[in-house]
Length: 152
Image 1 (cartoon, rainbow, N blue to C red):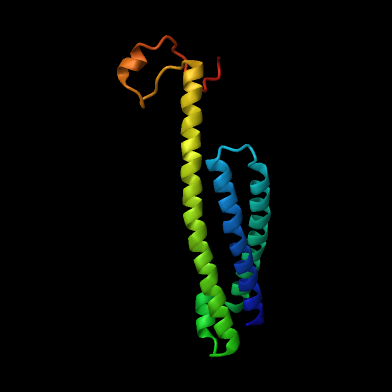
Image 2: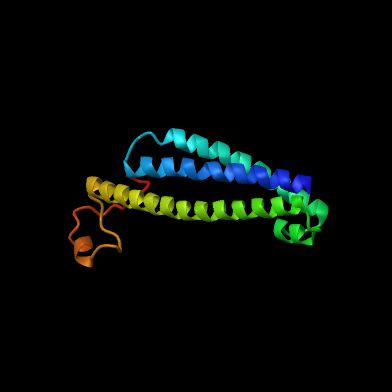
């Protein structure tokens, strides 16, 4: 049970740091700031730590022949350590739910940025319209090359 608590505590600590860094990245993206590198480096570092923690958790669960921590903890006798492990598991689940919400927000911001860049590149290159635009615009286009055509 000590190893379970150690793994879950480490996961909880890492998971609690990620929302702060993701909020920083979201703020940078909303402000259209070029200072994206620092939050990305922090996120990469935390994700490496989380990946190592996940590998340790998988190895532990294989060793104890349990499909997940919830079932392993539920199978243990009532004790103070079991209560601690249950609380850590709850905190990890809450952090993961928060991370999921933040990742969806980041995904929306990235999609918005991607659309903005594509729109401006199409205007600058005066490319022919795709199926997104009306057929009239495509027929009346002065150029017949596509946006990312290799033979430009």
